[in-house]
Image (cartoon, rainbow, N blue to C red; front, side, top):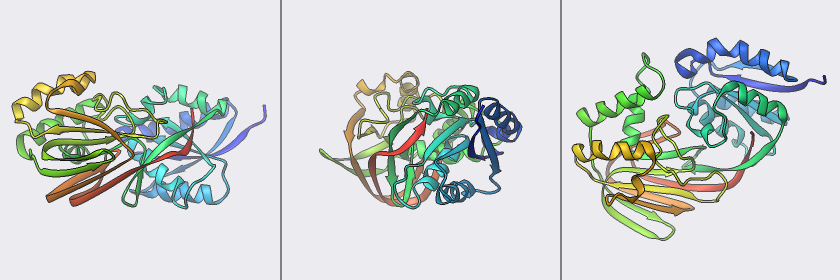
Length: 296
């Protein structure tokens, strides 16, 4: 068997420590399938950006990354740091939520290794929020606050992390800011609970916030929930889990290539679960169609 060489960037902290435990197994499985993966471990936040950017600059035709949505966020930013690239990204999901890879059908790390070994790739859309690129989506307001709390919970894993963070936000830090939201077709001005600007369908492991999203349609899904009481938020959540909330009278769903949000009060903003700002008053998001090739 002719071995294909690749760089594998691993976040050992992904999945509340699953990265460190599974990394040797991932390397062995890739080699069994014909991919000689040179493993490079991240040592600090944003280290994956540097490692992936260096691999691309060194001429790699593909870069592999093992981690969760936060690691994918860093990898995408590393891939596109110097502009568009023909380098393909392979993803081994070993994170907490693994939201983005659900869109690619990569439900298990072993399946992901098989897809990487097969070598087939597809172009997917990537978003940009200010100077940052993102794969799955940007959240403003409630879900960004939930992401902020979730990032501080280290003793749980999977969907329970987000469920606990959600309850903490509702109990201690629930806000309904007045926003102006500009999109391709006009503008909304209202108090909101949540604004999701999505490329992928799922957030938080199980919440189908944007059930109609697609990775290659050239559009973002803009989902806005008006300023609801805590009781009404709890009543809406079961629908969000099933992705049946878009017909709720408090929810507006649109498609747009660009979105701009303005607020007179500070906003928490996340991209792919990573906090970009704790006090933003302006947020600008756009989609870059087909900006990245993914092995899948």
